[in-house]
Length: 637
Ligand code: AMP
Image (cartoon, rainbow, N blue to C red):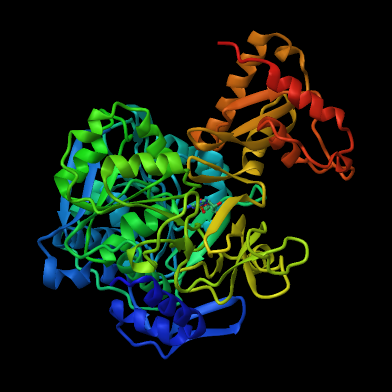
């Protein structure tokens, strides 16, 4: 479907003015075992229930449903340039593997509603596992492979899984990442001990198995080769998955999603935003550990009957032509990535991009962080296709703003991800008064409830935190995105960074508190502040300022460098390389308010060469001088 601008305006209005009829129509895109009785129940705001009484299943709609028409067509294309493997699974083969995996889970005691934690590299078995959970009504919680023992342990304790599925190792740039070792350490640290651990052995790293707990995937699969596991029909509001995201505290938030609303939202977005057609190939370069991977590597493309590419490897290895080689070989029509990855490619020789026939590609979608015009113009010019910025969050599960063929098809405006997408009633609100801002006035980006289908239902096991975090900031029923934004006179929105202590490194959201907590575990660290600082490649980089218990080891440049490396190692160990700061500076004091609260905004301003603003709130302004002095010290090369 596609609209001209005026027709889209009417379509958008209807989604806001009459969400019941609008979404009841969109719900016809998926198959229901039992039709829903009520489109929307918003009787207990901000809790929102979509398609009440309807019964459906994500796995049925993503896999089984297509068997009648496209059983022999590619469904999952698993490519690893790390292990030089490439396997194409048709819908029929994917169906068989998912049935086997579902039978394996049942054999290990997994039942409807149980949590299954998936800590896996980008291998086909990870997709089998997610779909198998969906099939039997188990709730998956995928933890990004770049997270290490401590982060993993926190998530194990919160999700309390009956089963963990993992692998011996992942691989990045040829370096083996020992998943099993990290997992063992995490289980050791966690209070909750899963009774079973299912392990894919890729032959990358030695694996010691715990007797009675650890089971080999390939061996158990052999006993389930002919398994047929019936789909469990789930009420639309049953939970489908938990996905953890960083917040302002050290404790990650478990975003909980439903089944029916998510399926409808994704199926609609695949048509109207991504304009994908059944039988085509979709390539999302993210990781299954992030929301983009859940929505647009696994569920979205498969719901649309498209083949999906799952890629393990770097965009520049063996060379920077690899993505374009995949596009050519599998005739990718729609691709989704992040601005940082494109900035990485921009540094590579241009002829590598030109080597391949990219005529199948119709559009490139970029999300996760602000898209600068230079990057957008460059890649659009080189590929000769539109580049479509889209703004969203783990919490929403699908784009909040964009301009794409099916959602407006207006001219884009540099630096703007566009305008609100159907279903989202977006406003910009003054932080202190709670009143709506005028054109070009900076405020907080909020969404008026009820949130459309597909968005989070609550935080796992913590309704109070869900309400307190997202809905208590303003007078009315307004969901806070925690992003600053402005809307110009023509209705284009601009995202101006986070309002909280969350930073965005290479399109990944990280809580500064989580990084600070892991740095604090170093025995010589007394206090620490982590801020996000503008970075030309990654958008933002984490920079740490540390007060030492004993400053002597950092007294010389070489000593400071050694200590910096040690601290980075500690972060790698506890949080994973994803949270590693780009620099660690040593200072004698940190800027704080009289009540002892760190003033991170002032530190960040100094790091970015800006005016730190109102110094009256800072008890000891001399601390800012310390920050300036630390930044003036050049790193030892
Ligand atoms: P995550 O939940 O990890 O996907 O991160 C969501 C956050 O990333 C948003 O709240 C924004 O701060 C930022 N973000 C995502 N997409 C965009 C975009 N297109 N433009 C600007 N910021 C974005």
